[in-house]
Length: 170
Image (tube, rainbow, N blue to C red):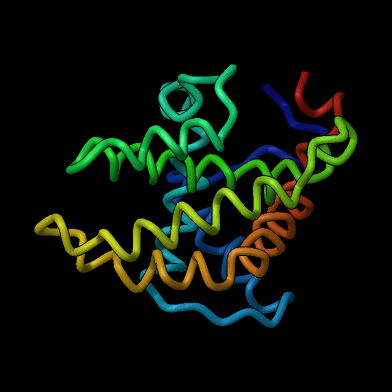
């Protein structure tokens, strides 16, 4: 199939594409991040491109993030951590990548920023509860402390990818 607009992503791996886009957005936005945080954002975008991941992350579409956050506080162990990460990642992804859509739908961006930042902060404080969690502790801290910066980075990637027009989605 021919792509007359030249907007198809021609790359062997989404990670490679998003790595370049994240790097470019960091440079343009004058944002610096830990290498693990940079990698985390690349994986976040790649994962949300897969429909199965999106369905798993949004399995509670009708449940507000605040209620899901409260539920995560009542779940100890790995289940509570999994819920927190789903909340944090789901708050970051649309607030950055689909920011314009949220604004057009009158969805409060501050709500997503608050929920995502708090969930990442809680993940940071609980990260050492798992054997591999310590590796992500500083990433979660940075995502929490600088959530708005990373929202802007994802918005830049979204804008550069130029897929948010109705005609592009079709």
